[in-house]
Image (cartoon, rainbow, N blue to C red; front, side, top):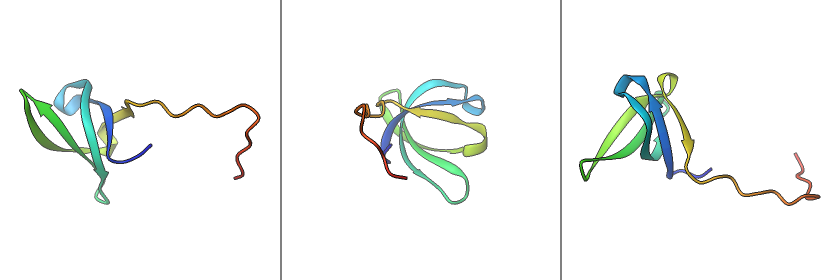
Length: 71
């Protein structure tokens, strides 16, 4: 997962149900800083982390079987 990254946003505050957006940052004040395209124009949004969910549009790369990750 890398920021900035393309995400799908779910947030009842703005009636977002899988809205495409670009996550720019997660602020220390508890907001997602997003860019959303509405009617062909780019808008900045700040959504509270506690009231929004999202997932990255690009899946995580597959881990090769037999490859061990040291933790």
